[in-house]
Amino acid sequence: MVKIRLTRGGAKKRPFYHIIVTDSRSARDGRNIERVGFYNPVAAGAEKRVELNTERVNFWMGQGAQMTDKVADLYKQVAKAGEQPAAAAA
Image 1: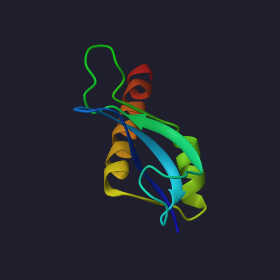
Image 2 (image 1 turned 90 degrees about the vertical axis):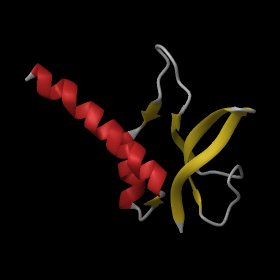
Image 3 (image 1 turned 120 degrees about the vertical axis):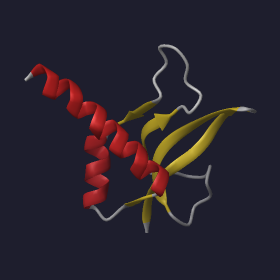
């Protein structure tokens, strides 16, 4: 089964996560199929907290991939943030 999940990077006490598409049997930080974004839980100032390529996520979802709970929450945040500027411009 293909999963869309987080893989950890960054330094000790400064986590940084890549959002990846991978086989569910591979290790957390192991081989991946595609990197579709990142999540920085300790972002400060002008740093981006979440960046996600929603087109590629939708493609993989169409192919049967499943998101983990945290990635689903991040996806909702990105979708919500993407709607607000468009609504304000209209």
